[in-house]
Length: 388
Ligand code: TGC
Ligand code: FAD
Image 1 (cartoon, rainbow, N blue to C red):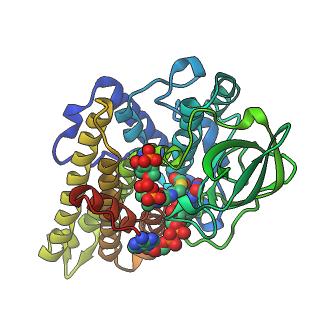
Image 2 (cartoon, rainbow, N blue to C red):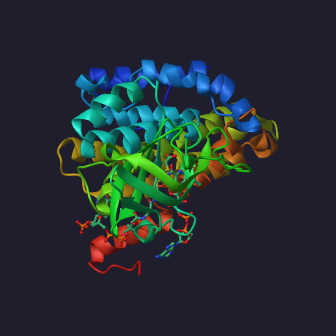
């Protein structure tokens, strides 16, 4: 059955023709191509490689970057809507698009040399090349500024030593955007697959994001050429600005997962009969459904205004922190209520609920945990930083 959306406040009225077209195209792709196979991939722990060229064909990689680099040149609301729809399919699919677009193409576009842009962006847009983003380390997650990975200048380029962990698409990637300290200052480097001294073993045993590849990146005297440094940025703000891009997409994506769970729960309550009546007729069930649609609607409104701020260059990273934190929080609440409403059926793969719920536990943690975003907003409103 085609998904009809969750739009209690008629927010579609605010969308342009192009935005509606993008949203509806991705929505149909998720119904036709993602949902029929994603549960099997999730159960088997396999990554849905067959979907990637189709996403590229729809222009979903680097979709806000200019056409001269083979990208779609769309606005940020289109990007948000696309992420919302993809995550209704599965967080792993949205993750793939987030990493490729916001964490690989965006830094190459923003910090890269013209040669780096010409070499990588068109290939990344068509998914002829896949990228990953290496910031987190085994001992530095929420505090990436403490990273231990180093780069040392040599006559021919740089030598990298250290390790990254929890890197989405690491094993698949043709190019890794890696953050390392050069003379104590954080810099970005492009490390190509097959470079001597670079390995990217896959991490196994996840109970969440099972349709996504997660990897370590290991650098053991890994020599890269001088032209592989990103010339346009120095310091921790380099990777953090990329995170602002990706967190923007996650804020929308998480709401997509919530919409999928709510839709499933609403339909279920209309057909499941207990005590001779549909579940939907009981007050306690209606209370849960109303909580869900209310939370989704408020998060949608926040995302719409976030996209407005972004398009007007008045969005601050703290706005994104609030939207990411809120979107994931309500999505987890909605998933838990949906699980409850489906009774025992809620634990089956026949419904998307447990898959979304388990995925959202990752989404709550990556790109800044719920509590890190609390501290970012807390520092913003009080002027007192409470991280350290
Ligand atoms: P702090 O001193 O606050 O900041 C250092 C410099 O960066 C600037 N800045 C930002 N700039 C742009 N966007 C942001 N979001 C920024 N946050 C900070 C800041 O103004 C400063 O600039 P300057 O000019 O003064 O140098 O740094 P800190 O060390 O105190 O740390 C702050 C903290 C904790 C907020 C930050 O490190 C943080 O966000 N930690 C969370 C780490 C995180 O989110 N990691 C994500 C890894 S990637 C990932 O998870 C990908 S999952 C992908 C997928 O599969 O979808
Ligand atoms: P920690 O930083 O050790 O935090 C543990 C707990 O302590 C959390 O609850 C946290 O909120 C809390 N905490 C930490 N500091 C404070 C404080 N100052 N005050 C109060 N509480 C605090 N990273 C990448 O670089 N690239 C990727 O592509 C990527 N993909 C990922 C994919 C998956 C499936 C997962 C699970 C993670 C991925 N990550 C990636 C890593 C992710 O960004 C980190 O896991 C995240 O930043 C949190 O770091 P940590 O796991 O080390 O937790």
